Length: 328
Image (cartoon, rainbow, N blue to C red; front, side, top):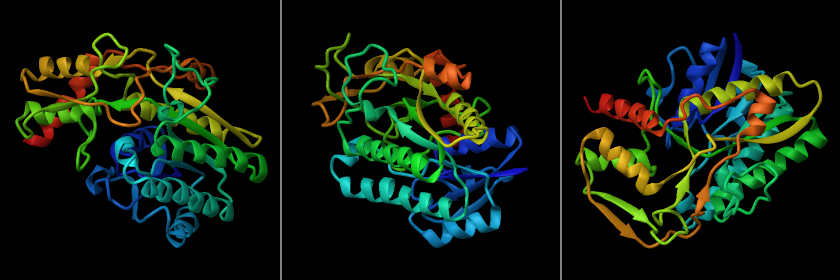
């Protein structure tokens, strides 16, 4: 089996990618410091190294011992709201950590990488469907940190011969359809699992930030992509970069081309769980774009990828099944 280094592979998205890698005949080598990930989220068939992407010695040992043919780089800080309070942490982990990783890749002659980027690089965008030609204008340090890493990868492709693809995720949601993996952030920051906590009585209710956006119900609109579809996109992207004969860098949206507002998601969560919960309305958070919905045509054209789970009710149902399995 061919080894693939998965940084941040013990996290929500990483654990699903590892499952997909195994199904496609790859062996994941997971590097994770377990700050946000969980050791038991890593499939038993995968190799695991506890460490930080800023630790060059650990990275060099992984490349020497496991000889991965490519890297899927997920490790980093992801909370956009937190980045507005502690930007230094985001640049330290997301940018400096990536530079250390790329230096180790160069030294160990591993030049193929799939990078976990984000739709937050677009910032506030007036397009109904955001395509990759849209100018990037991130509104928070999280989005800016990802944009910086994309720029580094473009330079490394042109100068050092990297073969790199940045996947600009829209909102990852859901769980493995067989409940083998799902969302377990501590503390939780994502909308759907927070709604489940409110439905289960773990928290006293839900906070909604901003009701005065120019949308149907005044709340933000996002494109929710099933985490299993997102994992499949990484396999397609991995095959794309490893089959490239020339250095190359590109970026691709991963989304469904449909959006839902915060209140629409919460209403579905209450329907699916069969439980109501209090919703507390707060003022807008700094750095939150009004609408982020993907055009996914480039992914279809380059990777032959399209979202399989396009029904938000099904996405939320899978997430609820996993949440219930963890509560037993």
